[in-house]
Length: 361
Image (cartoon, rainbow, N blue to C red; front, side):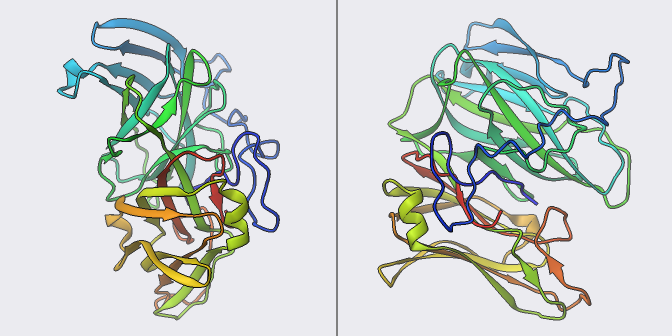
């Protein structure tokens, strides 16, 4: 499962009857610091390392303190072959050894100094372990230190990027970027990792991703809007072409979207039973076409697709997912495990709005 935060960001009100929750509904969620984690140094504290970052192109080093189990580092453009205005912020699991279990969700925190506003302009996965089922990268409301041994499925996220098998580098168009640095002198990212280990093999994780950032702000602030369902999915057994439709009604988008948003990239996501996916838009009773389609869908070849679609307040969104359960003799539910299902579209867009999602997530 890709566990996602729902509804509106700071200060937003929920749309009535939308099933969307607020991104601030963290009171009932895990704070990511629960007991039960490993204690390799015998201190009683979560395992952690120091984040040593190299800012800009002058090679200066700034110690940002501990950042969960992960390691954080940055390099300037002249050191990477990228444009001089682009820095690379490296996020790695830092040799974390997950508990030996089939399904484990771990969250790593990474803190970087932000002496001014930045735009994130790209994401490059650095994933080699077959145990990594997916990533969800989000930005924290404030600095936090997370214990990766604690359960973090319900962490309320402000999503920036998602990785699943097949996803390669994701670069934003030249007019857009994700804003960081507006919350103070430091920014903390949360990387949720879903480990899938059906053979119960002990392993060490050194994977992660690179974030491309620039101090030269672009005209548009980007966001991610997630549309689809997880918890309401039910797939009967023995059906080769079962269709599920996740709907975001027109009255809901009218409340969630204060202005039109332009979708420039889309990742359709489901699990192993899915065979095709697409999202269509209806406006005033007429079809406006599709935002994106993945047909045939394969879990191992997921990818962000370029899109060019404007969603207006009052549009009706429907994400269709077809599943092949012909080999099964028991029903499949929507949920967090790899053998459960989902039906989601992660859409990158601009201009930014407070709403984050619509669906039964």
